[in-house]
Length: 616
Image 1 (cartoon, rainbow, N blue to C red):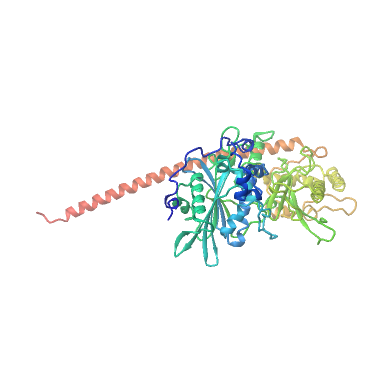
Image 2 (cartoon, one colour):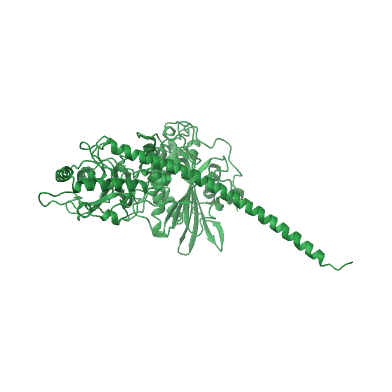
């Protein structure tokens, strides 16, 4: 076995092993010393003159397509999801420690089909993709390079694959640090291959042994691993097939802190610069906003990945720092939900496309003005809580929608869509849908009806003191019950989405009658069937003010109830802590009592044995 394979380099080679600039957005502007230009005749002799080269700075430039670090993480999760067809059942995202410098590393691991030697080279080549299926998410052949380089300066890949009777193991290094520090003017990606023969791992050499040894030396010098034994150790938990990606030299922010925060939450990965202060008139409102998924997804990877896929994949889990991510379907949490159908004209000769758009009020309505459309493509979230209407508009307040738009193509970073005429028509249609939904349903959360017909019925009912009065009382009671039904911090101030059937129908629930004079609003009783019993509860009227505005008294009452609930929650948390402490003390006393009983029992046995001895 060659010396390089027997022991590796034995540690880090001399010289610096990290970039001078560790901030992603500044690293591209950092100019490393350039290698001396090679002569014309030297280039002709080596054959390099006849091929185009890609400068290492392109790796950084290419990665800037990801403005958001979580967008880069989502790309790597997509790669694991695309492996479901090859048997993948999980993808793990976790933190590890670089033993050479004690810095954190970001690790992705799946149990998919893995990559054979040809596949790993295609993966680490620029712009190469074999994903042509209508169901796979990736398609440009660029995601691995852009995502890894966006998260850190360096990445190493371990993959194990079974192709027929051949079992191969491959290691590939994509190191921006190595390329810049060694003043390369071309992207060099060293790759090592192994195969299993008679239960032994043996090198698989495609070129010369010298090239293989050279790749091994580069990987050991510039990766977190110091010997070939350490490299092969990384395959122990991959089992029969799968892929592990280790990203190290993670980027830092302008304050010299890691962009990814691993310390504040042991079960999550947070973005340091994204958890900005939230708007809200009261402390309770701010707390509700900060707990809402639309806010947390900006800085919590667990929150973002919980809504990353529209439909939950069967037999597949995302495991973040040792804990499974619970899937959330935003549409299931909407109240007074309606479904709209949009049929875009993609091309003149194309088949008719039908898109289902679920629209409803957020369960926190009307206390919070959270709104926006969540647009998916091939089951993958592209635009979360997209503000189709202007932020300051009262129309559309608290309206949330969900749709899967497979008829338009996302941008390369999969965080937006290309602004094609088709996309602009979609934006216009969604704006119309939201306005129509708001016009017909805003009265359900305490706003004055915008629909002229409903407005006339409401005024007639209010003036007569008849059914409209009954509606006001019972809708207020239902809303109050919705507030009291919440038991966690995330649901303080939220109205229960179970007050009415999941698919809301005006005529079925409120019995809106439109046949002639004397018609009014009638409560049909379906709310009672869903558990809203108004007996014994105080019934206050919801006074509705001018168009598009909530009555301040109504908001004040809701805020007071939310404060009471919050105070009660804190009391229960304190009580829970006290009970846990009491349980611990009692368990300790029980163990002490058991120990004393055991000791007494032993002493008793000794005394009995002594009494039974014959008299000497």
